[in-house]
Amino acid sequence: MQLVFVTAEADPFAKTGGLGEVAGSLPAFLHKQGIDVRVIMPKYSNISAEFKKEFNHLAHFDVPVAWRKQYCGLEEMVYNGVPYYFIDNEYYFTRPQVYGEYDDAERFAFFSRAALESLIHIPGFKPDILHCHDWHTALIPLMLKEFYNRQPLYYPIKTVFTIHNLKYQGVFPKDVLGDVVGLGMDFYKENGLEFHGAINFMKGALLYADQITTVSPTYAEEIQNPFYGENLDGLLRKRREFLTGILNGIDYEAYNPLNDSHLVMPFHDLDVAKKENKKHIQTLMGLPVREDSAVLGMVSRLVDQKGLDLLAHVLEELLELDIQMVILGTGEHKYEEMLKSYASNYPEKLAIRLEFSDQLAHQIYAGADMFLMPSRFEPCGIAQMIAMRYGTIPIVRETGGLKDTVFAYNDITGTGNGFSFMNYNAHELLFTVQRALSIYQENKSIWNNLRLRGMERDFSWNRSAEAYVEIYKSLLHIS
Image 1 (cartoon, rainbow, N blue to C red):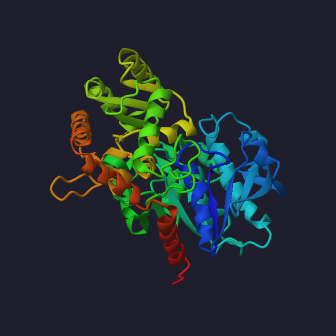
Image 2 (cartoon, helix red, strand yellow; image 1 turned 180 degrees about the horizontal axis):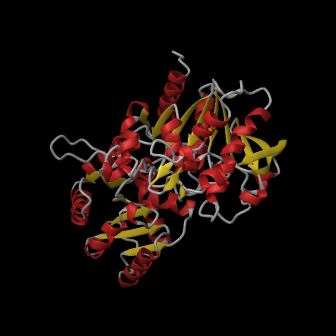
Image 3 (cartoon, rainbow, N blue to C red; image 1 turned 135 degrees about the horizontal axis):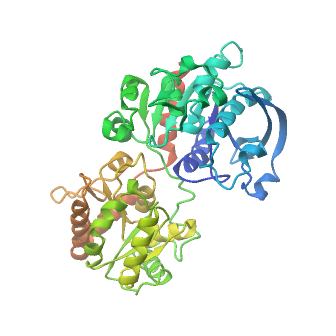
């Protein structure tokens, strides 16, 4: 089986979030299962020079972008046993950021077409499946059928499209259809790319991909309903027989409490290591070292999706409890300012860092007692899985991948690995924290069992990789 991942980002070359984590981890696990997997991504100017000096030039060729002919270089590097191919065009990819440019429609239309054109320049390789990720590559299943259906290399290829976050769909003015994508107005219709007076790249994949996946079973169900469906729920319901939810995994080498170089003490003795890492995060964040006070951690974008509006309603009440909070992240100005104000008023209770630091994130996962994720929606979420790996109890809202990974502690049966609340309600969040805090303070044996259950759960990529392999096999009719 020969497989190509096409993605706008992949760790360690470029990563802005969960997509980069997946595209950087999953191919290596598929490779271990004997699949010939390759990855195609843009050659961004801010990829590390240490990596770039290892790139080998394979070919250069022109790529059609509607009426334009644009230069494309193809460069290769093998990383963790997986060949990565980099689409080189300085005009499109010498930018300060991966996304958010004025011409993203043209940049990623070019990238999608270039990824397809590059296949004939990879020696000795004939792909069976193209696995495309998020709106940046969503035109590929449509382009494959419309522009390449008569070419022998291309027409047997099957396509898989993964939705990492349905909120971001690639919606652009309708003149992009002809001027950038190179398609006629016959595709500007309900059963085409038309979307409320604009065009929608993601619709191309939802209509034309052979199989659609998303990143948790619950999210796959949720997005077929209007509340979560972002105006595409009707189309997703129509294609529900081709839609599967597969939970993301985490990289157990990158997040290994036994040998994590970011920690002040590895977890060879859970109780001792937890105490030392907790003291370290309290000291590092400028909080008083109080062993008995529970530390509640957050590593998050500071936006409504992540439940910051709920937190805003009850933060003062939370800070009146016997807890300390440490928050790492950046986001909307109003939430950054709110947190700065509360941190100033409660300097012994709340510490914030308005940045992203991988090292500090690891230290929060390891040093906190509880980890807060009150998300409005969460396609998968990996922070709750990482937190559990480090013996930190998650407190989450029951949505998407949070619902699939965190099971509320049951007083009667003693089962569960965390705490959760159902409704998107600020006081349900507050009550859930209060419940967790009461068990933390009053019943250490229950708390320790919750920690151990979370640490024993298998959130590795092995399980998820096997599920993807089954989908690939079904498309190729391999038993």
